[in-house]
Length: 271
Image 1 (cartoon, rainbow, N blue to C red):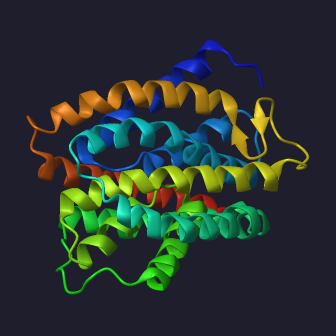
Image 2 (cartoon, rainbow, N blue to C red; image 1 turned 90 degrees about the horizontal axis):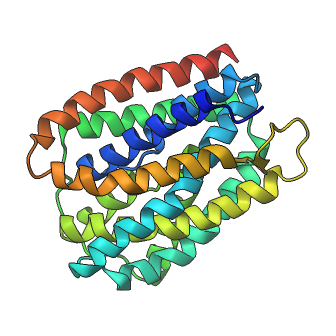
């Protein structure tokens, strides 16, 4: 699978789109990235089952880079609740490794595609309705946050997302202010990504039939191009958020997510 100019262009466009939307709408790029990477890999002869897994793993790997730039901006504003990060991170690492090293390797790509489709449909519905959970309780103790972190890391590892659609509602439900919840979720993206990527590499390292440029389940050409473009465009998206009607844009993007979820569901059921 040579890295031809057309492939670089496709990956660059995907990186620009996901980076800009991440900054504009405050969402991770995984829900957009996974379906399109699945298509790009499939068009280059990678079997559907493997293409889904590599798309999920590569999407997660890009979060390592995007989370660093995002956290720096949030930290400068003093918005990150590092006390929560410290309590959730151990569970996140454990859950991520269980998901990416164990369950991810055992599940068929078709099953992961169906799970991804259901998760994205749920997330799109939350975005479309712009539902804000009512704060009803305080953050649980150390054991509770360890368990919550485990769930966030585990689910994130199966869908290739940074966990924001789980961690932000969880924190706001526990009376964490929304701007703190978003900033803290960005910080949590880093341990989620690092732990899951370690699992993807170890789980796919001895796999046969991987395409050129693969490192375990990670597709390095896509990682390099998408990460570079998304990191550059995310700040522009963040600035545009102050000038554009983000509420309306979220509903439009939610509609696009439904189409992408339908595609992934079709891939899963067809497989």
